[in-house]
Length: 336
Ligand code: ADP
Ligand code: MG
Image 1: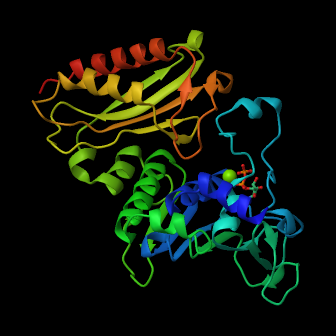
Image 2: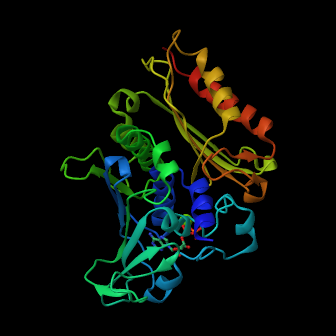
Image 3: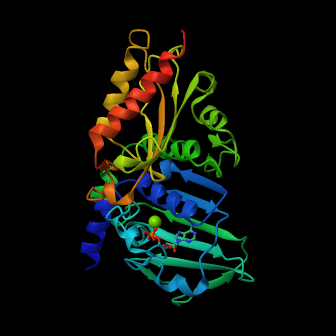
């Protein structure tokens, strides 16, 4: 069973960036306003995430890395929401099967922090005990993942270089830093004191985009905001920022799409937006696109593989048409 669990976990977590995304989402779900990430060798040797969120109750630590352990299954609607992602309560369990995982956590009501080390789904301290150990700690949670795929050599070999893996990590943090307006994100490489990304909570959207992509983008943004524009299609709101026709850039930038606060991709939406925006841009120039959609969770297709992030939704063509029309309308107002 251990080997099967490892193989299954390796289907979900195929690179450090997959674990990072899961841990980021957990930290955000825990109400954190500061999230710090530290990586060594592209996250392969070490990936550490520290948050100032709710912390985890000491009594929950023994089962934390069991499959299907979750505190998030509250209403039936949740089952059909994107947060399920075919992946409810499986992230920590999966990570514990393919790397060394430990946690240091403290809730508001606890007088100290608690430390636990996990292996293959179980809490197993180095001294052989199966209980969390009291430790000094601030309110919040630190997850430390070490030696990715130390026990799955084929997966380890399939990883890209440390630099490539780090680029993927920084990219995902940057996307969340753009989207999460009330959270500050920072990222460092182990042994290096300078920040590769550093945002404070409650920065305006332009500032967040500037922190991630630089001022060349943030000086040239056009807001897209459709509230109650298509309730009939199950969409509550579409909010975003796209670069204006004056934006001078020839390098393609992957669009930043969030649906119900989860980072996703949707190729149909991406292509439609790019072709709508194309006619406003000088030949060969590429736009930046950030869009956040709030969609009735019942309309989302969750039957997508967790690592693919590709999400489908009901009335897709009509919704995409309306978003594109809005973008065209906004861009038409600007004279270049
Ligand atoms: P899921 O997020 O689907 O519930 P996970 O395996 O990612 O499953 O996490 C299991 C549970 O561990 C969560 O439901 C949550 O209760 C707890 N948890 C994980 N990370 C954190 C965190 N950073 N802060 C507080 N609680 C957390
Ligand atoms: Mg999770």
